[in-house]
Image (cartoon, each protein chain N blue to C red):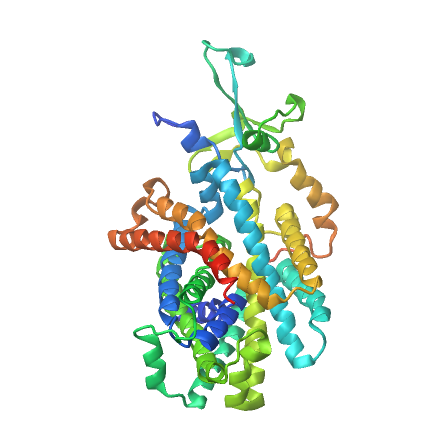
Amino acid sequence: MTRERMVDARLHLLSRQVLDADGEPVRAVDDLELVGPGGQPARAGAEVRVGAILVGPVLFVRLFGGAVPVSRQPRIAWEDVGHVGTAIELTVPSDRLDADWVEHWLRDHVVGRVPGGRHDPEADG
Amino acid sequence: MKKVLGVALGVLTAIGGFVDIGDLVTNAVVGSRFGLSLVWVVALGVVGICLFASMAGRVAAVSGRATFEIIRERLGPKAAGANLVASFAINLLTLTAEIGGIALALHLVSSVEPRLWIPVAALAVWLVLWRVKFQVMENVAGLMGLLLVGFGVALFLLGPDWGELMRQAVPPSPPSTEHAAAYWYYAVALFGAAMTPYEVFFFSSGAVEERWTAKDLTMNRANVLIGFPLGGLLSVAIAACAAVVLLPAGIEVSSLSQIVLPVAQAGGVLLLALVIVGIVAATFGAALETALSSGYSLAQYLGWSWGKFRRPARAARFHVTMVVAILLGVGILMTSVDPIAVTEMSVVFSAVALPLTYVPILVVANDPQYMGRHVNGRVVNALGTVYLVIVVVAAVAAIPLMIATGAGS
């Protein structure tokens, strides 16, 4: 994926924009989840890797402290990441990501229902 | 030929779009109290905004990343979050002032109370954001804003003593009746009005909206380097009109009708009508820009999808943010607060927030990972560093000066 390039978590991953397979913005990387071998919880002294990109409420935890229940934590699996550049590009469309549920909810229940909400502004008029 | 027309259009909209309610009010107030003795601040501010707007435009065109994405990435969530809160609040204050400005201008021509115009103005702003294509929105508002040239016409019709105006400007000589602290307070306010951070958010996000690439850099440079200084000249014309008519009469500007008084005196009803249309267009255009900027900054910090080039449903959170911002602005105005006072506040707080926006742009414009061979040259970096110092000084001085002078009174 990175071909011998060193990836610095703080410099190249955290707070980077995440784009889906169509190049649409999803979220910014709010935090990273580390896991041990075989998906075990990360343990001190053992090998760990990035398991997932965390978004949403975890940002407030990073800013103000506290904790988010693991079941309520929106995550994007690291397996879905295709490329790490000035943005992090996913190999899946955002419609398939639970992490983007607020956008989907607002689209389906609010913005999409207002007349003109699905109008393409680049088409004439 | 098409390219020349494109550049000309860009330049013209940059001129018409340069002046907003902050520039209008601050320049008129300053002109009526200090004559042209603060013109050097307008010049300083115009060079600064040219420098950083073209830098932000270049970063956006080359890397595809808009300003607040970069602020978050470079400063991290904490510092960028604090920046977001401050920028968003100031942006909201500016949006409020612009919507109030539209209402005041419409009040001048209709004698319908401004408070009745506020919801109409806000609804019109939202409809344009919801429906109109980005380029059309930019061009119409910018071209109609050019009618503010009426201030320049008025200045010539007034037939002022040009020698006297020059004497006020170089070397800067404020009237002896004014306190030095008030002079410097308005210097900071004028600087904040010229360099308002929302212009940079808007400019860089606009570059992404219009899908600029490295090929468009010449156009970017022409728009900024020709358009903004000419827009700055409009600001000076506003101040000069006030200096010629209001300063000798001892009128201190506290309403929009006083700002346009010199125009009415010089050019009669026709010129006044044209200038008021120009003011409506300029404040309307700036209301669109500030509303968009509130959406841009929040969406870019959190990484949401944003932009007018998307269907509203594909940038749902972005559109909801703008609606909420407009409603908050209307709510503030409905308390019957004076929009002119809101404007004066917003430009001073803009000055406070300047370093938060301009430092990260300068840093990223030097990062080859983003910029490739389009990183800053030496001259730009030297100028940028000088401006950072000025910006920091203005930011630090703003609040103490505000307290010391009782907000300039």
